[in-house]
Image (cartoon, rainbow, N blue to C red; front, side, top):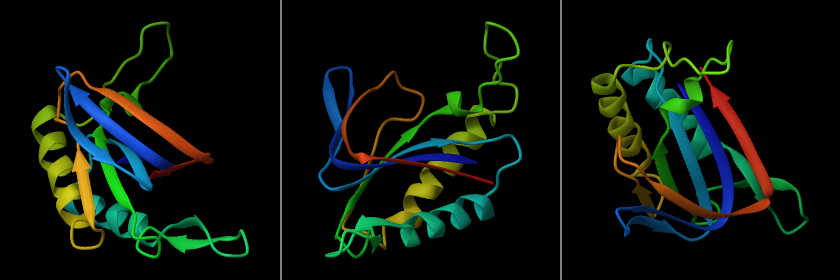
Length: 144
């Protein structure tokens, strides 16, 4: 499983001209599921995400977690994180099959919900437009 985490001041996701998720201060998380991922993998990364301290404290040090700042999370499914570009045309052979990926995507979201005030998300497999204001910019990659 791969997560691209972007600290944001605001973000939204739109499908067919309808906003399906919108947040203020928090994280946009692009989530890719690999062929060998499990619920245990998703739970482990969700716990790491919640504990991650990348918000600034009063001294400007990155010491605060998403819970400390009462932040929100917007999760977007992104199988293209598993692109392998040995040629000019990417291969996605290591991405999880769609059924597994969808199951783990929603499982991951459920793991986050008890810990933050709002978890929003896109629609799995849809063509989505994501707008965000990356704060910092601050972007982290977590993977198993």
